[in-house]
Length: 119
Image (tube, rainbow, N blue to C red; front, side, top):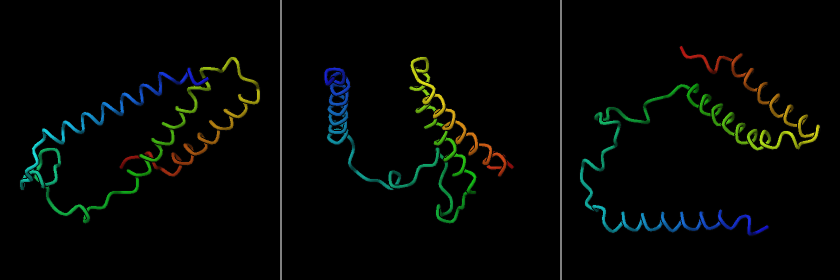
């Protein structure tokens, strides 16, 4: 059983070592002098104006982001189920139908409330 996960463990260890090496190289070779230009916030090449605390974003942006995460996670759960679909029992099929039904009810509620409409 543990031999099945050996490549995954080696990949995690090697990627961690690679990240540590890259961070060390950046720390030693990178410039350390802080200038006024570096301390300034970067906004896509445009000079920043105003205070970030004064700007209020509509809640719709956050609701759309939460819905995106919700349905993105749904795909993460649906993919393994779809891979082994033919080997599953009727209980597994019913449970995934309930899972998708609850998610669709949430989507219908969001659409009914107008979360996805841009004005």
